[in-house]
Length: 54
Image (cartoon, rainbow, N blue to C red; front, top):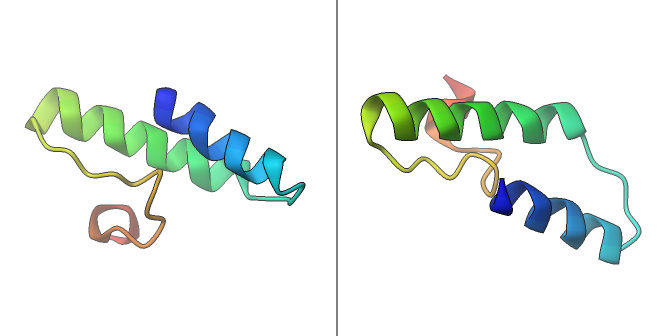
């Protein structure tokens, strides 16, 4: 969740719009990958992550 807050803050600081749905998808996949697969995917920081695209 810290990464999610950080990403939102970056967009807020720039006063720019962003796709919240895409960010939450990344958060969901990051949590599932970490808990179930013991993998760090970084989908929130990288919307082009291979796990998020697949």
